[in-house]
Image (cartoon, rainbow, N blue to C red):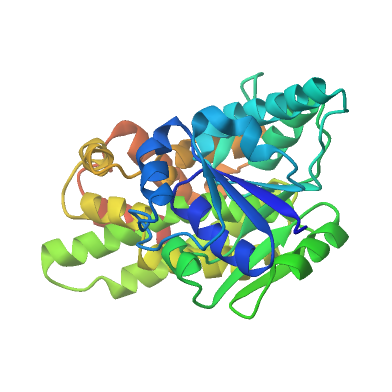
Length: 363
C-alpha cells in the first residue's frame, strides 16, 4: 500500500501539490476548508481547479470541511496549504481529529512523520507576539498531544505550473536536515526538484517577505502603466533592496543570510514579482488606487493578498526580537508596512520607493 499524504487546503497551492505528490507514488487526500466548498465540488466532478486551470491527477481523494478526520485517516504525512491567518485553527482541528480517531479505536493518537508547511506569512501567538508559522504549528500540535516534526516548504513554485507538472524547484527545510533530505528523496521527481536544507527559519522568513516585496515590484509596474514610461531602473533597485532586507530579517530570526540568495529568497521573489496576487495588488496601488481600495478590489475578485498583513507583522517581529536599530536596516519593509497600514505613501509612491531604495551618499 502506498504511503498517504493529506493536503489541508484545496486552494491553488494545495491542489497543485497533489500533482508532484501523486507522481512520487503517494496516495493523496485533499481536504478543503469551509471556504473551499465550491472548489471541492468542482474537483469532485473532475473539473479543473478554478485558479490553476488543471484537474486533479487520477486517484486523488477529495474531502470537504466536515470530513477532516476521514481525510487524515492513515496519513503518514500532512501538508498545510492554508492561508496564514487560518493555520493555527486548522492545525488544532487536525490534531483534535487525530486524537478523536485514536480514541475511537483505542489506539494512541497518530503522529504523522512530518507536517509540511506551505503556507506563507506570520502568526500571532496567544501571548500576542509575532512568530513563524513553523513555531505556531509545532506548539499547536504539541498542545493537542501530537508530536510531529515540522518542515518549511518554499522556493519559486507557482501553483499553476506545479499543477501542470512543468519544471519547478522547491525547498524543504527542517531543524533535522536528514529528515528534509529523506522527504526530498521520496517526493522529488524530474520535474519537481527539491533542495533539502536545515534552515526552516530562513525559508519561512523569505517565503513571507517575498509577498511583501512583490507588492513594491508591482507598484513599479503600475507606475509604468500609469505614467507611460518604464520604471525598470527603480524596479531593479527595489529588487536588490528587497533581497538585502530579506537576508537581514532572516538573520534577525536566527536563520542564515545565504538562504535569501538562493531558491527560497531570490528565486521566489523573482517569480512572485513577475506574476501573482501580491504583484497585482501593488500594480493597482501604482496605478493610483489607495492601498485599501486596491485591497478591496482584490477581495471582490476572491483573491487573498498575503503580503498586506505580513508587512506590519514583519516590522513587529523584528521589533520584538530586540535588534538595535532594526527598522533603519529595513527601510523598504518599513515603508511598505506603514504605507499599507496608514493607507497612503505620502502622496507620491514613486518617490517614497526611491527614498527607500536608491543609494545615498551623505557627507
